[in-house]
Image 1: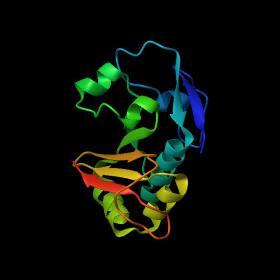
Image 2: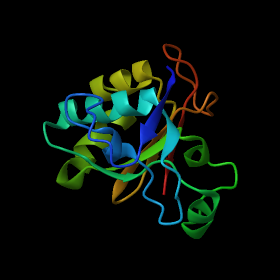
Image 3: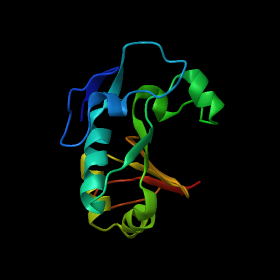
Image 4: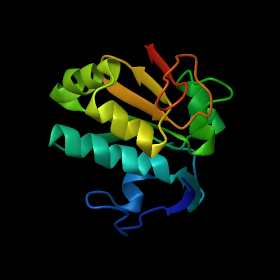
Length: 148
């Protein structure tokens, strides 16, 4: 997919449930009025919400270098490029992650959106649009799945 430019405080709806501002950088040191963000992640958030039938909370999206460093992010993090997203799924996180691990319908939807990186933690689900992965998938190509 392509990149969208997101604007701070924009109420422009970019899909059925999210405005631009919902995906905007949450780093306190970010002072610009806009930043790029991968459209695949917006589609993925919508797919997860449709799957679980409840809203998701955008926990982390685009990050500054300082913000990324302060939260322990990798120096080559996809957050720095607007190509990673963390979602808080609440009590449905187990349902969401079980589907991804089993390569069931949600996994398939996310891969069709362009999501190739998944990090499953106790609180949030990480998605990114990395090009390469370490786990084979004959249908969609390599992807990465790890637990934090």
